[in-house]
Amino acid sequence: MLKLPCEDKEALKYAKKMAKLYSPEDIWILDICKEKTKGYKVLEIGCFSFAGLYGCSLEKIVDAIEKI
Image (cartoon, rainbow, N blue to C red; front, side, top):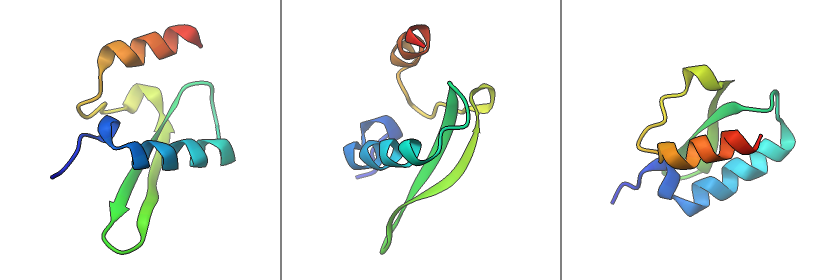
């Protein structure tokens, strides 16, 4: 079963690990994908204003941005 991006705990763990290695701005996006055989990979990094927010909780996003 396909999970929404914000519900995949392993994807979130990987994203946090990658964000520790590279953080270009205070607020930015990191798209990752899961390959069938190789695990998670970084797909793209970009500015927040171009984020698609695919199924993510807008309330959680706004709350997090307000803290920054």
